[in-house]
Image (tube, rainbow, N blue to C red; front, side, top):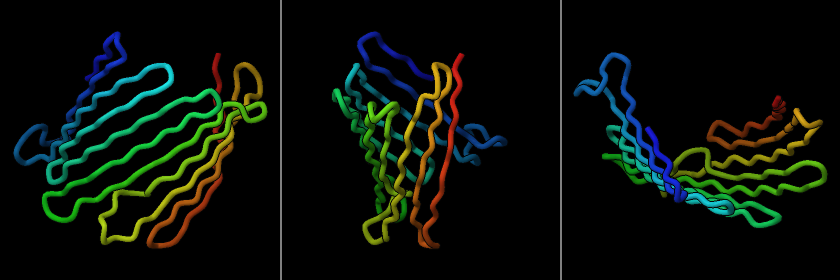
Length: 161
């Protein structure tokens, strides 16, 4: 459920359960809440999730300057047993690079505790408007992991009528 107020504030919440044990003692239920405030050039959101044995908190924000939009977020996972783990993301969007727009991002691949090695994902994409109704967005990424790095190329085509 969600509700957006006229002032830029919004709230949302949700519940998730297993298919056979909806909101029972036997099931694994997850509850989530989010509050956000957005305006034309900035926004911030705070989220809370209780997923049985782990509590998550997150805060995300963005600010749009005339020539660049910056976005960042951090998440914390606090399990009932074990160390607190955190993760982050940071993004830069340049809306006018040639005929298109350029997006760059970095973030952790998961939440990591202070005694774990952190792994990162890097990404870049360029959205190019082919005509009034179609945009092609090629992108590249590199993701690190304990098993080794992975890299790839992605192409997305968007149509609007």
